[in-house]
Image (tube, rainbow, N blue to C red; front, side, top):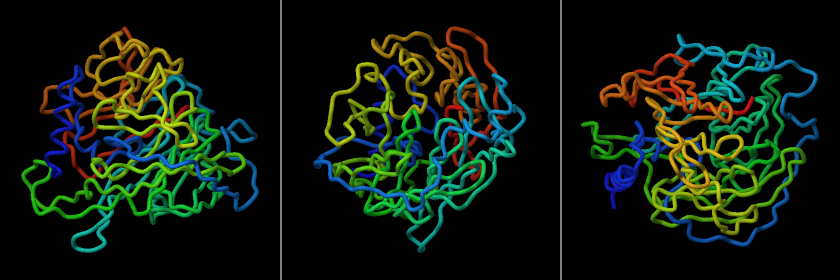
Length: 398
C-alpha cells in the first residue's frame, strides 16, 4: 500500500463517520505534533527498569505558584484576545487555558533526497507576555501553569530532556539511556511521558510523484510503515527518576512518529490509531489495558479531549457526552477543538465562511456550549494549507 492509498483510507474512514473531515486532516495524519499514532501496536515488552538521574540538583520548575509574577498571572482577565494578530505576538488566553506556544514547519535538507521536517517554535516569554521565536528545540511540550517547558535538542533522538523555565530561561537536564523524540506532561504536570525511538521520526524523503494531490511532484514524505519507536519513559518531574517500557509498533502503521500521550486522569498512556478502536491504552508499566469508560468516544486527532470535569468530549464540530457518545450540541463553524477554557467553553479553529473554498482561512475562536456566543481570539490564517507561515497552536492550563 502506497502513501496515497494510506491517506485515502484514513480519509475514507473519517468520512464514513458522522463527523465531517476536518480541514488539513491528511496533513495532520502525516505530521502531527503529538498524540498521532496509527493502526495496531504489536508487542508490549515487560517494563524494564531504567533509573533516570537529575544532572544538577535545582529547585523544581513548577506551576509558577512561587515568588515570581508570571505574565500569564499578572493579567487575570477571563478572556485575553488579539483578533488583529495572526500569528499572535501577545498572550492569548480564555478561562483556564492559554496559548502557551505555536510553531511552523519547514524542511531542513540533509541531502538532495533526504531531510527533516523541522518545527520552529514561538514560545511565551513569562517576563514580557509575548511570543518569542526560538530555534534551539526540535520538540517541546508546556506544563500546566505555563512556567515550565519540556524540550528536546535539535538532533533526534535526544539523550537528555530539558526542563526550561519560561521566566528565567534556565534549563534543568534529565539524561536518559534511550533516545527520546517526543515528550508530554501529565494533566497535573507531575510526570512526563517520553517516547523513545532508534531513529529520528521526523525524517522525510523526496517522492518522485504527487503524493498529496496538489498537482506538484517532489513532495517530502516520511517512509510509511517504518516507525522506529521502541517504547516510553514515565518520569517524575520533581525527582527526575523514572522507568522505561518497551512498546513497539506494527510494520503496517501509517505514521512514523507515534508519540504517547496521557489519559485524562494521568493514570494511563495511550497510542492513537487511524482505524477502530482509534485509541489503545497502556498502564505506566507498558501493559495494554481497557479504555477508560469516559474516553470511549475520545479521538486522538482532537487535542481538546475531555472537558475538565470529564463529562464531555470535544469532537469535530460537536460536543458529545463522554459516557454515552450522544451529541450534546453542535458547534456551528467549529473545525477543530483545541482546548477547554472550562466545562462550558471551547477554543476551536473556526472558518468564515466554511464553504469548502475558505476552509483553511480560519482563526482561533472561543465558543460556548449551547450558545451562539463566539469570541474571536486571533486573526485569520491564510486560506492555504501549505503556506510557510501557517502556525499551529499549543494550549496549556494557565
